[in-house]
Length: 338
Image (cartoon, rainbow, N blue to C red; front, side):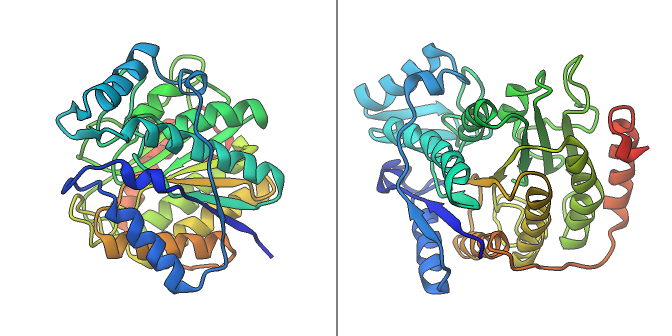
């Protein structure tokens, strides 16, 4: 039987953002839904990331800026969208540490893990927080996992392109970054031709999708692009930036993914993990701002992680065109697209 862990710590609720879209009620709704669903998951208490670990992905000046704004000033804005409070620095260290705790858990006795952390991370750059994100949790954990395992596949299905994560590994052949995201949309990055720096071409794969893309379009991408290239890359562990804001009910996007669609996507990623890396997979919470849609989708993902196979059918002409464009661009780097 598949053993799935859920990482959570009460400090995540002390990242106070008031009526901001990225608010503590998101985690409360998810925890309530997990409890009412009857899911058999194992809760794990995370550790805090050390300053040295955060510094593998962020400048010391930026880390000090966040600490000072939180602990000395009692909070403020890192940018116009990214608010912090007195406890946000502590929560952000625990968020990064939470995903690393997940990496440790799947190297020991659990099969896969979902880290219910906040603040989220995939927009955070080396010296700048943005897009609700303070420290880049998945990037910090990737650097940790790379030392522990080797090759890392990052799958980012948040509706926004993870510009911070992409920038962190744009020159790194040991990390594949794969993103599906709405385009045009914030932050404006993630074009098909952004394939990686010289010497690491093909290790960044962006699939920008048009507003209104629904389950058939997403699942075509994950079956026809992610699955074959991931099997060729052959990762030793998979990390997932699991934002649920591509849901049809989300107020900050124009996509049409259903709750079942998230489960189906997760099933495909789990299949890759089972084939390549003995099922080792760690998801971390990113976006998702409709509380019901978010919590339902996280439960659907957890069910898929536990082995419930969710099928999705249908075709999407616009997604098919984008898939062919991605394959044409990536063909020079991967045999599976030849």
